[in-house]
Image (tube, rainbow, N blue to C red):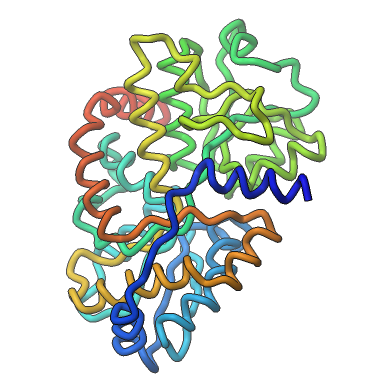
Length: 339
């Protein structure tokens, strides 16, 4: 019972209030997509965290959409940019959606990444499924046990990376804010690959979502050094959070980064998505997030939900794009270093 209570506390720490869905909105969702095929393009590999969440959510979303079939298609590449560019170019009326980490889209744009051929604020945001802090972990055999250990390295911190995704950009901001040298080694295929590199000692450490890190932390394969969030974990209160330990002059920068990362795993549609389709999909996502059976499954599997309504998220993305200009030079320098 005590462990279950901790899980509920963790969910509450990183989740906004539950979404109330009007009956009319639920009917609208069922009407628009009733009998249709809906394709969800997952911005990640079949073994990745996005896919595990998408699979958990799929039967409930299909039910609340009223769709004939909700088909999941993996589209890894570029840390989510391949899937985002594909959705950006869709023709009007296409029932295809992106599911993945929305923060990557905004960060890639701020970094001037040549792989980002879109304006992230013009996508149609359809609802966030979860938001969880990112955690920097090192391998169990590593001598690094603190941020001070990283800062005291006589060499760059070696960071295995799957490309210019949100974790790559987060590490660049951390290195700038906390004053350590960073060497990103790209070419890895997904979180499982970078995780193995850290455990084997081929890299010093990497950043992943909390749910993806928890198993390795509990097993003793990894050690948590720092979290990128504004909220400490009730289960692990001794893990430092960067918004507390960054120098005062860098606090606003790391806070901006933490805020962007909170957009996390979300559904988005193309900029030309029909207004009726936008409203219907948002209503279905909201209904899915309130489904008692989904809540039971997510709690049992420790894949917690932290929903945000798509309309709220749409405004939040526009606000973040305006307020994150200070991140741009840091991110552009990081991209230049690996080119």
